[in-house]
Length: 192
Image (tube, rainbow, N blue to C red; front, side, top):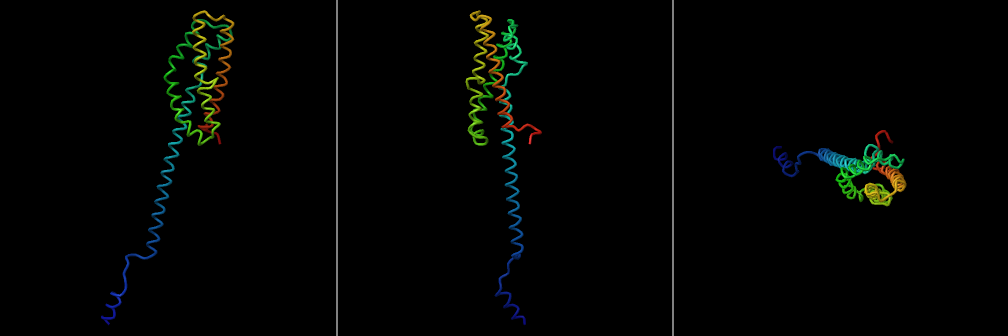
């Protein structure tokens, strides 16, 4: 009897665990891989949200707020401008130059991602906002010329007033485009 039992042990292979254990281990491994994939996906989504928020802040930096140069420009357009208004505009332009240039630089690097996520029209809108005929850079140049010509006295008060109105109209158009693109990129809280 001993010899028959010894024969059985030597002729059969003994595997640690069973097929059921292997399937369980495989399931655990697949679950782990899915968890890692989900975690990596969450990280990528968080990074993309962060880039969108940064782009939104950069777009906001390109807007013309009333408390900066718009109020003095409105007084000039109404014919009520005084030298302090022109000085205020020049100061505002000088103080915002670095911030505007940095924002434009970051937005330039964001353009490809914008095109991939939202289409070529959105990327072209960004280019128009920055460098278009009524874009941020052109408006800043027009405001600089306006204040310099007023200081020199080489423009009539009517021409200064008319040009200030045109600049204000361009600012309103630019700000509307900025809001539209901002809200496309960074969906406002409470929006579906």
